[in-house]
Every structure is written in structure tokens, then in C-alpha cells.
Length: 110
Image (cartoon, rainbow, N blue to C red):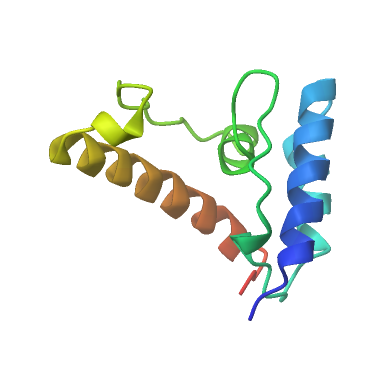
């Protein structure tokens, strides 16, 4: 079982600093480095969003210079989604996850 608290702390720190407008790749790398080799577990996610509506994975990707894929245009009520719409949402989330893990792998997050 991974370290949920570490992810909770990371998420809160990254979103707060990003919202202040001072997060850059160097500072974010410093935050990420402290978790090197740790089994940081996204089960600690609290679902925080930045002022511009990004979650922690998106903030990390953007800060490291990645281009965020376009979010699919889906109805707000996920209970009304068609199977194709659900598949689009799943593909979007998988893409974001893959991009995020490409970055965290550089810090040897387990």
C-alpha cells in the first residue's frame, strides 16, 4: 500500500503554489524530489483544483512544459453519458495519467 498522505501533501502544496503564480519547473522539481523512491499513492488525492480548474496532474504536466490534451466536450451529468462519451473520458484520463507518470518516473516515484 502506497503513501496516501504524501500525495495529499504534494497535491495541496502544488495547487497552492501554482495559484500564487510562482510555480516553475525548478521549484516543482524540488517538491517532487523529496518523494524520490517513495511509493506516493494517488489514493490520497483530495480532488483539489487550481483557480483555473486544473488538477494536480495537469498542473505538473503544464509546469513541465507539456501540452495538455483537449478535454472531451461531455455533458456535466456523467450519468447521461453514452458509452462512447465514457470511452472518450477514459482515454483523456489515461493520457493525462501517462503524461504525469512520465514525469514522476524521472523522480523514481514507485
